[in-house]
Structure formats: C-alpha cells, structure tokens
Length: 499
Image 1 (cartoon, rainbow, N blue to C red):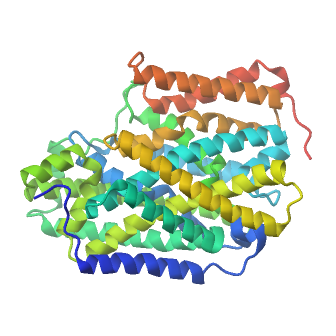
Image 2 (spheres, rainbow, N blue to C red; image 1 turned 90 degrees about the horizontal axis):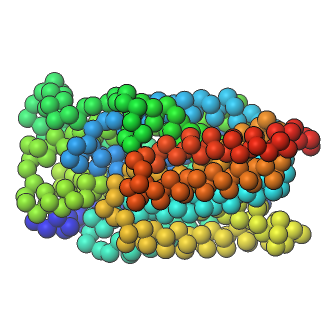
Image 3 (cartoon, rainbow, N blue to C red; image 1 turned 135 degrees about the vertical axis):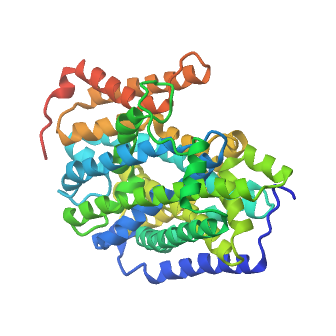
C-alpha cells in the first residue's frame, strides 16, 4: 500500500462537501443585520458570550491541536510532556487575561488592543504594536494553514499547493460573507463537530483494541508515553514544568491580550462581564486538548495491534503529523471519516478566516484610516476592509506554500508555537505599560527594538548550535530585556496623561 494514497470514497466526499457547504450556508443565515465597521469587525458588539467562547476555542485549537497533538504522541519518543504548557501556562494565562485586561479594554468602544494602547500611550506605541502583530500573524497563520493543507494532501493524492488554494478561497469567502459574525458562528458550529469527531475516534479505538483500559495504560506506561511532568531546570528542553509556568504562560497571555485574532472575538460581547465569561469559558480548550491527547495515545496503541505494512509504516514514521488523518480514513467507517476530515478541514478555514478578519481590521483602522485616507467614510472603509481580506488571503496562502517547501518535516506543534517568538514579548510588555499608563514612545520603541534584536540573535545562535536554548525561553527573556531597556529610559516610566 502506498503511504501517500488513502481510500477516500464517494460517501466521504459527499459528507465533506455537505459539511463545508452547509456551514457556509449557516454562516450566511446567522450573519445578522449588523452594519458598518462595527458590524463587520465586532458583530455589533452583541454576540452571546458562549458563542464567542466557542469561537475562541475553535481558533486556538485549529488544525495544530487536531493534527499535531496526535502526531506528537505517535512519533518515536512522543509523550505527554507538552501538556505541561496546556495545564499550567494556559490556565494561568486565561485567568490573568480575564481579571487584568478585559475590563480596561471595555472602558472605551475600541476595535482592538492597539486602540487601547493608543488611548493610553499615544499613536506611536499603537502603530508599533500593530506592526508587530502583522509580522506575527503572517508567520504564525501561514504555518497553521500549512497543517490543514497537509491533511488534504494525505486524503487525496494532490499537491499541497492546491490544498492551500482551496482552503484560502473558502476562508476569504467566509470572511467576506458576514465579517466577524460569520467567523464566530461558523467557528462555534465547527467546534461542536471537532468535539464530536474526537469522541467518535476514541470510541472506535477502544472498540478496536483487544484489551481494556487498564492494559492500555500499562502498555502506554511501558512505552514511556505517559510521562507528564519534567521538573528539570534545563533550558534546552522544550517541555518542562518551568516552560509551562513561565514561557508558555507568557506566550498564551500575549496571544489573548494583544493578538487581534483572539482579542477581536472577546470585544464582540455586550459588556466586560460577558467578555470575561467568554475568556474563562474558553478554558474548555484544556478538556479538548486532553481528549486529543487520549486520541493520540489511542492511535499509537491501535497501530501497535493493527500493524501497518512496511511502506505505510515508513511514511508515518517520517510524517507523524499525518498519523491521525491516516487513521481517520483507514479505520473509521465510510461517512464518519468524511465528517471528521471535514471538521479538520473546516477548522483550518476558520483559523485562517479569523486571521483575515484581524489583519483586515488592523490594516483599515491602523493604516488606511490613519495614513492613506483619514477622511474616508464608512462605505469606503468597508470596501477597503473587503479588499484587504482578499489581499491578506493571497499573502498567507503564498506564505503557507513556501513554508511547506521548507519545513514540512519539522514538528508542526513546536513550530506553530515558536513562530511568534520574536514579537509576543514586546507586544505583551507594551500592553502592560499601557495598563499602567506609563511610557514614552522613545523608551518603548528602544525597548521593543532591542528585545526583538535579542530574540532574533538567540534564534540564530540556536540554529547554528552555538547555544543550547529552547525557543520558548525567548519569551520571558525578551520581556526582561524590554523591561531593562525601558528602565534605562527614565521618561519611559513617567506616567502619561490619561485622555
């Protein structure tokens, strides 16, 4: 059997097409009647917290969790150590976000955290944050688009580039159709599909094993797959309790507080109390991550007792991120496999359309209305919003294609988390300075430039094996460098005058 050739029948294709087209139709129906910039980018600030929460979870899960988590456990030496980041840093960051940032963000009717920064620190700091966000969004979401394209290339033997094109077209269509409202409702629907798919996969795996849970645990433990905690203070390790508590917490707090892809959803709620519920409700991602970890362990066990032929085994050994989609189309009943692949496929679309909505808002409010056409009315801004959605769709698709040519064999789970390593530290620090209403643009700019330069230098030194430092540690290092440089600039610690 050819490891790249997977039997995906007409029934599976029918279900896949029905789910994608059905979700598109439902997104159109639920887009509501909100008009203008407020409606396109924030859903009229009237969306229910539980829908927003589901959308946040769907966006953060994306194909990275659905594909890469089982792949990380399937590969040789894979274990549960990565959950330290989810169980420690993720939970800590969500609570910090809910109680530190949410209420201040709702003091004004703003579109993004960069508007908040502008109100507290001025336009210079705001534009700096927008620029850093654009860089991190371009890089990070290019990788996420690639993960889904790889799935489609496994299901049918088509080039990854063509897969990227199909996903990009649907993502642009969903975003143009109803702005953030369509994005949120389609995300919510797809999260339910993803959750159901994970449960079905686990049930099929348990039914296909010739033993019970106790024996499964014994075999997994014997293979060192259940290793969960590592307390080693070794900065060269990716997953330890320290990276979870400090590095991953900073990454996750930055993602929630200053990454417009996530923050934009939170701002669609009616008030800060509803937004706080949405943020805390998105802790459900922890449950889903544990569920996907169980699926990943189950897939490994399944193929220990349902041996792959030599070519397929070699294929998955070299591409462990494709293990779960391979299992879906080989082990699940026809139709069910189509539903699960549709969920993964649509998850990739929802992740990309989230990025398109966020990048469009940043482009229009941060660039077009400030520098190109400050006198533009709502009609012109909405037209520019749609044009920018199409433009960013093309850019991210091209980047994903290039990334696929360069890094297909790298662990996608680690890669997706490491992409924003240059920008998240200074972005978070600027937001914290804005909360404190302290900072001059000169001091903040200097601190940001130095912290990015240090982060880039560490990445280069690691790639050349000059130092043994995991990229996750660059998050706290860049924050400390920012604070140190800012401390050297006395004006940076002077209180700004609130508006």
